[in-house]
Length: 251
Ligand SMILES: Nc1ncnc2c1ncn2[C@@H]1O[C@H](COP(=O)(O)OP(=O)(O)O)[C@@H](O)[C@H]1O
Ligand SMILES: [Mg+2]
Image (cartoon, rainbow, N blue to C red; front, side, top):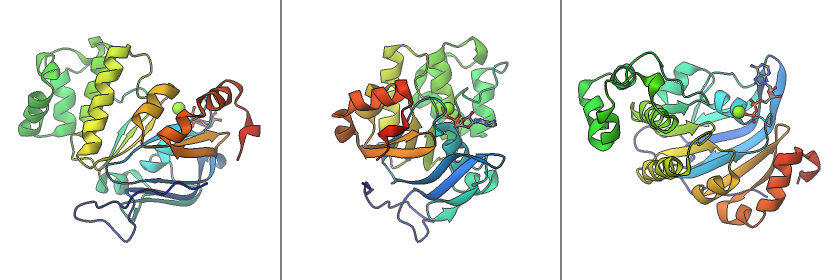
């Protein structure tokens, strides 16, 4: 089964490919040991795609490879039609990455974290105008913020350089339900503005409600893909895959 993504219409410099993100036969991992094998995946501009699977399935490895932290061992990573093999190419394609541990400087204030990423006062002010909660916390040490406030700051920092492709690892881990719903709304808003979103999420129900489509990894291979609606009907089967890490659920 192969899901078809709607054509992306990225402004400006889209290459011959129509997808915001296109993985073709991606094999990736640390050193020479593949943790992800022959993965085909697409995300269109404005689309929200979930990357699911049990611990150790290869989700973080996939995101690390898309954003140029890890070079692919085989296959292709294309972002708006341009290959990405390192951090510089990823930055040029305006890929924003919120890593699992959020990538913030915990000893710096909110404002200092924002200034490092957004660079100009005008952009920092635009963040405060949109997210007044961050304006109220501007002088607070980042390590003292709640988990939800840190995740919001991490998301905003990642997006602050006019991102076109947003990658989020373990989006809601450890966060209270009210905080989660606020983050979900922001991700929807960002996608509605045309940003392509690929996120990793342990909570199946949250992921399948939010996403347009999802891919499920097990032992580094894609074992399921479909729309959020299709996969919601199979949520028990997916949950058992999480608990058992069962490779027999392969297609
Ligand atoms: N820095 C690393 N060095 C070597 N192997 C790693 C490293 N990080 C992850 N791995 C291995 O790669 C596989 C996939 O890990 P990961 O992508 O982190 O999975 P997930 O994010 O789905 O939990 C696992 O077997 C893990 O042990
Ligand atoms: Mg991970």
